[in-house]
Image 1 (tube, rainbow, N blue to C red):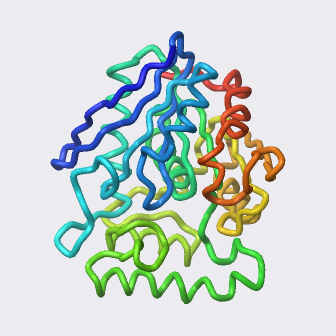
Image 2 (tube, rainbow, N blue to C red; image 1 turned 60 degrees about the vertical axis):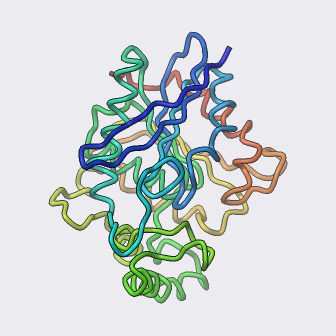
Image 3 (cartoon, helix red, strand yellow; image 1 turned 45 degrees about the vertical axis):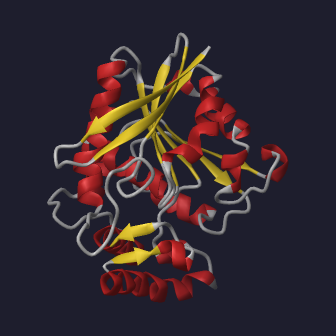
Length: 286
């Protein structure tokens, strides 16, 4: 039996949202799952169901500005990595720990969600004992193969400019992410241009903290994903030198669907199976 739950979460700055949860009987681990840029938590419920069938409780976080979040990005409402890492994720972690204190914890994510999972674990090493990534890598332009890399700096400068000009990035209109806060896009573009994780308003050296992460890290690379090629994933993993890392590349045959950045979400059983088979190498938490 798998229980479906919505955990109401309130951040310290007035932001609130729901954690969409799938809780199996006799769960042996709890995963906080972070979505890709502009993707609402509900789109990961098939993945949550697939993992729950393997005994893993899944809590799909809602990014500020999406789905159940009470905020929407516009000229008057802005946020960046600081708010996501220091306000929202700790509140989701606390909700999980309060409801299921006995379960060992995992943090993971898809695309930008995987990057911010790395950053959050770096800032709060006690928050999880393992790190899971799907189609996630650094956006750093030099980490991409030629010829695509040569056009990326222009894109990475244009998107923050557009977000500033409009008050928020019109992602739905241009086909990149959702309608995103301008400071979020600025933080993302800073990493994309420099290769360094940093956030406006934060004094912590996130890259130094990432180098101290010591947690088993498992990554799924999709064979047809031009948004996250192997070189992009490898650059991200190079920031975790103390962590044992393992990469599994899945193709369309393994997935039963196109092996691209988003299609796996419609048929996530192979991805879920890959992770479920590897929960035994977790460090115990909490």
